[in-house]
Length: 265
Image (cartoon, rainbow, N blue to C red; front, side):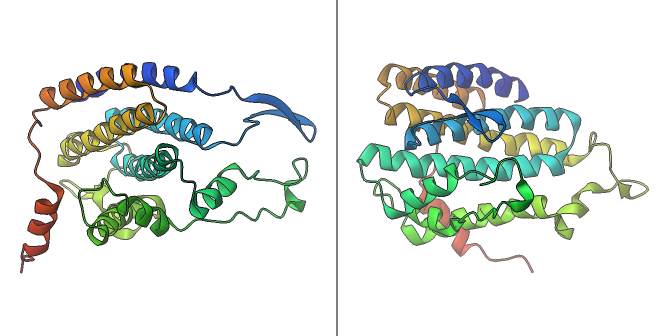
């Protein structure tokens, strides 16, 4: 499966280059006594490209961590990819419909805000950044008309995924204990090779590579890049076939099964 992941990265790189070329380039501007790159037009499209850059960079990082056996740190990357892919879907909806809501505007204002209003003196900067609650992004995605899942279940699914990986970021005990075990039991501080966690993480990575591929397709559709979109459809078919996942259960049926499954005693 890892070989397939490495095959995917050049495809995403090529798509990114074509999509990035559709918007203006960042400008090298002066802030305080130093220069930085910034987008002069703080557009939704530029925000999407920046989020997509983090998605592809994060996928690269995930493979490095996976090959090193660092599954805890891999969980942190997966958690960031969850948010980046959600953000892309949320922002692309505004591009496709032409409807920029108050939530989109607040999101962009927070996204583009400078970290320090006094660039040469962080100590004197107020550093007040408005935070958009993740549950509002989840609700906006769940309420998209093309969503196959009812909004209530959609929000709950996103919340569950978000919470599942938050423990890796914040160092919750139940997550940290994943690196404890063996004979004799010990903390695995140099990676978890030769443990069941590796195969589980390889399987889990499939979801992130596939979802990220869908995000790139969403951006191509939003940017009216039909030729690129068709190429990505072809690669998605190849990705599904190579990984043996070509048949899909409807989200509604899947959620219904989860809801009716009795917890183990």
